[in-house]
Amino acid sequence: MSLHHAHRNVAARWRARSAGLAAAALCTVLVGTVPAVSDTLKPEKDELKFGFIKLTDMAPLAVAKELGYFEEEGLFVTLEAQANWKVLLDRVITGELDGAHMLAGQPLAATIGFGTKAHIITPFSMDLNGNGITVSNEVWELMKPSLEKNAEGKPKHPISAKALVPVINKFKAEGKPFKMGMVFPVSTHNYELRYWLAAGGINPGFYSPTDVTGTVQAQALLSVTPPPQMPATLEAGTINGYCVGEPWNQAAVFKGIGVPVITDYEIWKNNPEKVFGITAEFAEKYPNTTLALTKALIRAAIWLDENNNANRGKAVEMLSKSEYVGADKAVIANSMTGTFEYEKGDKRDVPDFNVFFRHFATYPYYSDAVWYLTQMRRWGQIAEPKDDAWFAETAKSVYRPDVYLKAAKMLVDEGKAKKEDFPWDTDGYRAPTPGSDIIDGIPFDGKAPNAYIDSLPIGLKGKQKVDGATVVGG
Image (cartoon, rainbow, N blue to C red):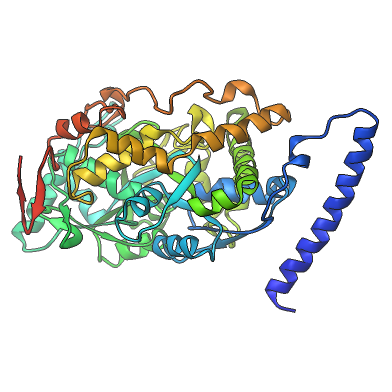
C-alpha cells in the first residue's frame, strides 16, 4: 500500500471516529449541553501537509501534532522536514505544502516580490528570540583581548561586534576575507547578524538590483548555509562564524568547534522570530481550516510556556525525535529549558531565550512586519525609498491579527484559553521598543519606519540607492 493511500485510510478511519463523536455530541446536546465550537467549525480541507526546518522553534507544530490538538480541531496533519528555506517556500506557493514554519521575512519578501513573487500571509507568529551568533575557536581567541570581564573573570555580556574589528583587520592584512553564515537572505538571522555587525561599526554589505549577494562594500562577507549544516561548515573552515537558531549554536559548544558570543535576546530583547505561513489563496478558499490550524497552534504555544515552562522537558523529548529536529536531547535542552551556554562551561540563565506564548508572542503584530521591512530597505533589498504608509499597508496585507483573534476568541469561549492572555484592544502595533532593549541603543517605533531607518548610522537612508559598487542619492 502506498504512503498516500495509507494516509487516506487513516484519515477515513479518523473521520468515521469523528462522525461517532459528533453523533455522541448531538445526543449530549439533546440533554442540554452546548457543544464546543470545534464541533461546529467544519474545516473545508481536513488533510493537510505542513513543512518545517529542523530547528527548535518548529516546536508548536510538533506539539500540536503529538498532543492531538490538530486532530481535536478536525485536522489530519502530516509534518514534513524540508531541505532548506527556498524549497520550503516554493512548495507552499505551488500547493505541495498547505503551510509551513517560515522565516518571518519570507511572506513579506514574497508579497513585495523580492525573490519569488507570491502573496503569503501569516495568522500566527511562532515565537520570540531563539537565535545566537557563534564564531570559530580561532576567531574567539582573537576577540578575547578586546573583551571586558565581569567579577568572575568571564566575558561581560552583551558582547559588542567592536571586538570583531581587530579580527577583521587582521584577516584583511593577511589577504583573507572574513566570512559568516546566515540561513537565508530574508531571514531574521541575516538581519540580526547585520544589526550586530553594524552596531559594532562593521558594514555587512548592501544588496542591489544587479547584485543579490548582499556584499557591496562589505567588510564581512555573509552567505547562506542551511541551519543543520552550520556546525560542519564552521568546522571545515568555510566560514568564520554564523547566526542561526537552536540547537545549532549549542551544537558548536558540545562539539568544541566554536563559541556563541551573543543571543538575539541581547541584540533586541523579545524580538519576533518565525511565523506560520500560508498563501492568501489558501486562507480565502479554506477560512475554517485556517481558523482551525491557528487554534491548534495557539494551544500548542500555551502548553509550551505554561507553568513557567514546566512542559519544556517533554517538548525536548518530542523535538529530539528524528522526524522533528533530531538533535541530541542535551543539546536541545541547553536552550529550551531556560539556559544558554556560551564558552564551554559558561552556562547562564536566559529564561526567555525561547518564548512561545508569553509577551503575546503568537500575535502577528504589524510592527514586527514593519521592522523586517525596514531592514530590507536598510540593506538594499528594497531598492527604492518607500513612504511610511507603504510600510503599514504591506504589513497589513501579510500579517493577519483578525484571523488570529477570531481563533483566540473561539478558544476562550471553549475554555481552552484565558481571555487575559490576548491583546484584544491593540491597534496591531507594539509599544515602541526602547533603546535600552536594543544593542545599539536606538529605539524602534513601527509607526515611524523612515525616521527609524534614518537614525541608523550604517545603511541606506532617505532616497539613497545602490548603483554598482557605490551608494548614490541623499
